[in-house]
Length: 162
Picture 1: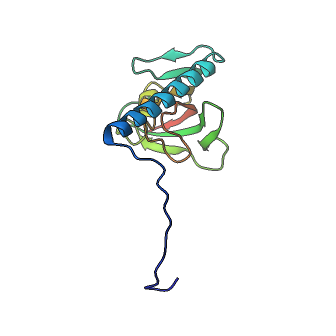
Picture 2: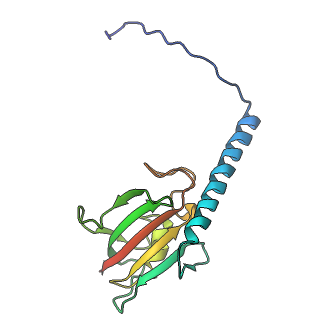
Picture 3: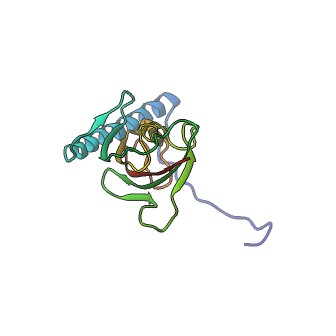
């Protein structure tokens, strides 16, 4: 294409909504996403044992307990993790050794709220499975390969508390 050259587009109008109709359609889609996620969560939980739930709705399983240093707000922590969708699809991880432990300062909102809450319960060396509801994860928007309204499952290990 040359600078100044004209381009022709053909656009087909598929549908027209007023603002109220559009809001209703979006609310219906949101309800469908939430219902689908809720069903998937129940199916996933049916396969798990020893699941504990916090007041916020975060669910977790303690896979390995230690007497290590307790994580607290303001601590810099190092984590190994594998994040999956409820269907088992891996969206991110560093447990396979391809990446170093992930570091962040606990309690400052540098990670999703579910991580801040869960890691604050952990001690150095402990391993948990986290089932993080969409409200404590990436919410209505999703992120990258994570769809909106997705409950996430993380296998995590608290490697170091500084």
